[in-house]
Length: 160
Image (cartoon, rainbow, N blue to C red; front, side, top):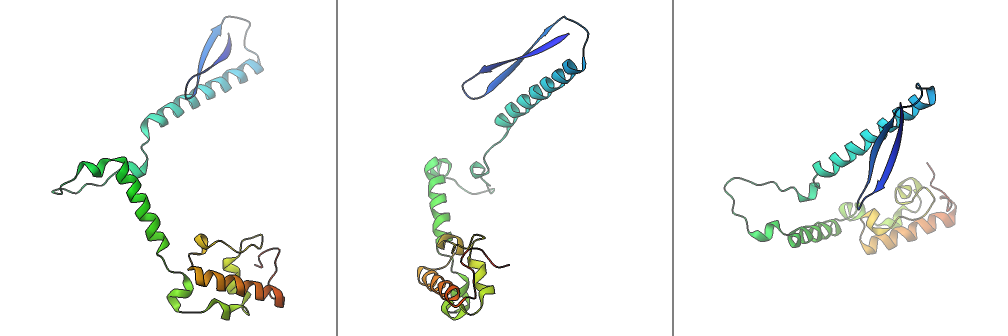
């Protein structure tokens, strides 16, 4: 028995069909080929099931008993509004230096603290990564540059 795979390109995914022909007794290669075809068919089935069974977590809502909902709460516009609110809340977070009321320029002599704000390749991390205000991000970059100029920090990589 010899098996072959036939790939058909659909709109969204490939479908695999299996044709079986009567031939010589199975050799090692044909057994291996058949097992790989079975694996491919199983993978295709699981992928199709996963596409139909999964729901995006952002689309799942938690409803409380006794509350009234507006049709707007179920719209795409509400999802976009929630995303925008989430971004604004993340932007309003204050950084480490604001919480403790410290000046980043005072830390140019302690490279261990400044290394937290440097990538593995030695680049100063962006403001959205460090979660600092514009003022403190500029102070931090100036402190890192001072530390590099003095020779306490490397400009090529992060010191571990």
